[in-house]
Length: 158
Image 1: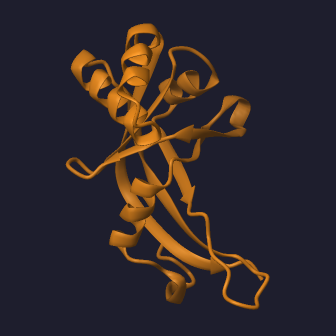
Image 2: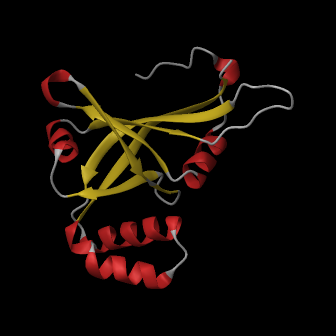
Image 3: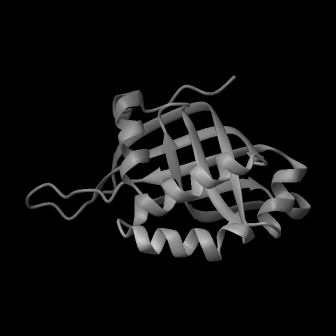
């Protein structure tokens, strides 16, 4: 169903893909937008190894939610910060591309866990977490992406 990577020598392992998902804070979620135009939006993400899914938070209404309600098939792309080899100008970047299906999380306890873990991924301040959960949680929508296919590769930009 999904294509094999064309430049197979550049492919990274599933463990490397998962490490990038855990370490990097954000990527770009792409979906089918209005009038057949693709729609990609940068988002913070949370990868939970326990269920091999990605989680996001967003507003309860808007273009993204409308697109997801129209079609649950999405892709998500994450890149690491890259590195340069000594004496070279080109950046070497590892990227991960994920295809899957996304849904709006309705379960209150699951939403709470997602939001708390997302905040903890970005901040280690428990007081900040408490304030965010008290003030922003009622306005938050959470999304769950089931991973159908994931690949990653190392690319030299030269």
